[in-house]
Length: 174
Image (tube, rainbow, N blue to C red):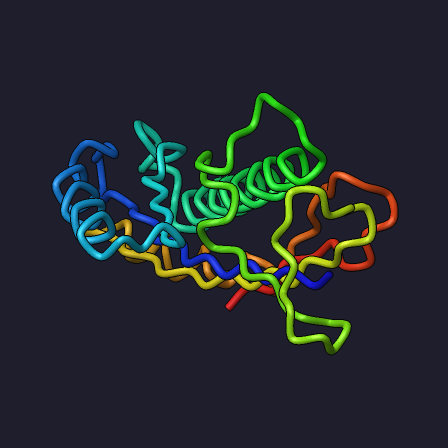
């Protein structure tokens, strides 16, 4: 079975001598909008790695931000895929409502016009098509960090998948 995962990540970067709390109003506004539109395939990352570290240049701050964004995306996707894998394998500790398929679509690959969503499905050979989009929102110096960070985030992220037999273990990033 071919499973598509499409997630949009919004990254918030504070400015000079700032902290993530300065962007908490923006973060809450985005969360409210996401909740009102039932859009669970949008995630927010409020960068913390530059707090108290805005004196060492755009290159260093941008690199820290890029690393944090990469780690946030990788951890979120791996958690999502692992939860889905455990749910489909019948693990009682994972519930269907645990955000396991909010941004996952099953695609019919055998031509029978039935996208199989049965929990008994063997996901051992599932292939995941993971597509990620990123928006960076920076305030003041955070905008410069964002410009540098986007140049450092790779177009493909390697993911640790739950099985050895998965054929696609990358996420495409735009």
